[in-house]
Length: 334
Image 1: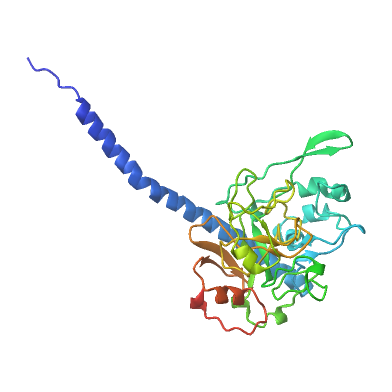
Image 2: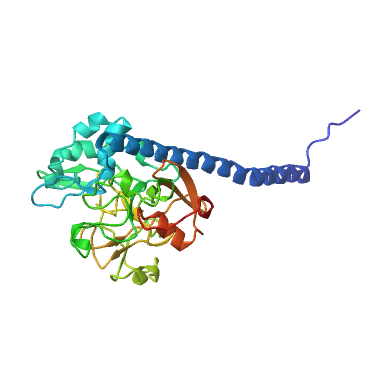
C-alpha cells in the first residue's frame, strides 16, 4: 500500500525563502517603475505650466509677475505667477472667483474674500512623488473654530540668482532680480537674451513637513549671508515652523517660501531665511528640491522639461537661472 508523502518543514522553509528572495528582487524594480511613472507625471505637469506660460505670453506679450499684482492697502502685493496662469490651465472659473484687491492668504482677515477659492487643490501644482504632509490648521473666525487649509504647490517660478524676495530686499528697493520672475516683473521674450533653451522658467521644490525635520522641505533661519546657509546644520538650526508658512503651503502667494525659487545653490541643497524670521521680512534662499532620485525636473523657456542631476556644476546651474547673463551653455552641460 502506497503512502502519500507530505511536505516537510525544511521543504516549506526552502519554498518560503525562494518566494522571499523573488520578492526582494522584484520590489526594487516595481518601485523604480512606479517612480518613473510619477516622474513622468511630474514632467507632464511642468509641460502644462509651460503651455499656459506660452499662452499667457502670447496674450499679454510678457510673462506674469513672479510676485505682485494688487493688494489690500495695508499689505504688500504678493500674488503669484501661478494665480495669473489659472485661465490658461482651464481654471478660468477659479481665477474669476479671486479678488486681487485683497490678499492671497485666505487665513487672515484681509484675505477673507478669497478664502473659499484659495482652498482649492489643483493636481497640476502637485508632484506625485512628494507626499503632502501639510495639515489644515484650525482658525478662529467670528469666535468659532473652523478647519482651514490652502491649496499647496510644488512647482516654482525662477526668480534668478539673487535671494531677493519682496521689493525692499534688493539694494535699489525694487526687488528686481536676474531671472524671469520677480517683484512686479513683466518679462518679455526679447529680454531672454541668453536664449530660451538655456533660461530656466520653472522647477520644483518639496513641500514642508510639520512632523519632522526635512532638509529638502525646510527653510532654516540663519544669518544674512549665503555661507551662513551653506554651513548650517539642518538637524540643529532653527527652522521656519509657523503653521501657516510651510514650504509650498499656498499656490496663490508669490513669496519665495511658496511659489518661486532661485539658483544660488545647485539642486537638493539647503534653503534659508537669510536673517529674517518669517516669509516676508527679508531675503530668502529657496533651492530647487525633489523626491526624484538624483535630481530635479527643470523647465526652460522653450517649454522643454528635463531631469537635472544634483551633480550639475554650480556655475552652470547659476547660468541657467539668469535670463541675460551672457553665459554660453551647451545642451550637454545639464
